[in-house]
Amino acid sequence: MSVLAEPELSVVTFTLASVNVTWAVRQPHPVVRPLVTRYVGYAQESVTLPVHRGLPSRHVTLVISLAGPVRMAGHSLQALVGGLHTRAVLIEQDRRQEGVQLELDPLGVRTLFGVTAAELSGEVCDLAEFGLGWLPERLRSLRTWRERFALLDEVLAARVVSRGAPAPPPELGEAWRRMRGADGRVRVADLAGEVGWSRRHLSERFRAELGLAPKQAARVLRFERAVRSLRGGRRDLATLAVECGFCDQAHLGNEWRALAGCTPGTWIAEELPFLQDEEVAPGRDSRHDS
Image (cartoon, rainbow, N blue to C red; front, top):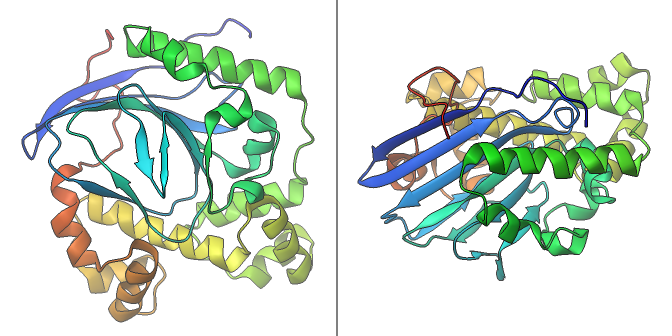
């Protein structure tokens, strides 16, 4: 891996709803960055919410617990890879939690793990299945987030360099980039025309690589934007629904029940007191010494 300036690390400690929380966030090494959006380290004490809803998002998720195993969907795993999904996953929570979460671009999964995101769609897999069963213990032995993230850079960059997996077609990459940039508010026919494919071919390639049809992926992206807005303090659901690409507030509510398993109001009451806006910006209320 080439020697470049280390990406900036942001570490924030705060108390939220009587829970002591530390978040550490940084971007991966540039070699890894096209495949992994960011690393998020977390440590929480005195957690009182017994079950957390893992909501659908644009990312394949890699979670490595440095405390007790993650208990979800009938699994109890020290480290797991969760594919794209269109239903909330219920995660049992211990009073103390510590670990690292990686947000993976689904089109990069083939390079990192040798399988497509479609093969992981709706599934939860043990990280050991991909030859990294040793990683949780190695991360746990390191004292600082800086050291832990540096190890992740080393491990993932080695896979990028050594595997040489074939990249998805550039047309698919462009279509996925455009859909993400529009938060799902784009017509599939227009997207197909922009990349020079038929609508049918675009749908087939989406399913083959991501495991979701374009309409399903767009649905998740619209929902994800609504989640970000609520986490950021927005409460006018009627206006928010239109801005996020829903027909009206009723449509927003129906989608929340389908994808989150509850109404927006229930999610706000149950989960939001234990969450803050997750966009931890380097240099903002942060320390850079850990």
